[in-house]
Amino acid sequence: MNADVRPSLACPKCGLVCDVETVLDNCRWSNTFALSLWYVCRECGAGSPIEISGSQMSVCGIVTLPGPEYGPITSVIAHGLHAERLVNGMKVSFRGRNWWMPI
Image (cartoon, rainbow, N blue to C red; front, top):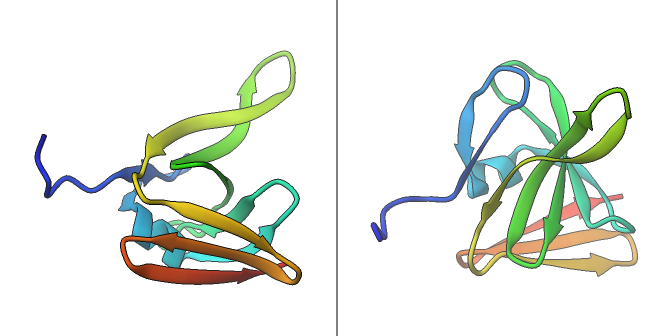
């Protein structure tokens, strides 16, 4: 396995691929109940919910029709990713960095 390969996710609208750190840099707020963040693509400006479960980060949206059913569109395993619910937001840690997302 190549240690230089960084886990990445793509914007569901324009396809811009960003590493986990860049995704977190572009998250605006959190839903602490669902351990989710709101990601805004730096290329097209589209917003997408990002869910964190353990070391898995997923871009979510409508996944089946005629549903509609909500769930992961694409996911990545990011070893060391950690999300923590706080009273007024969410703290996310990854590769020695910390992000705080307000509610």
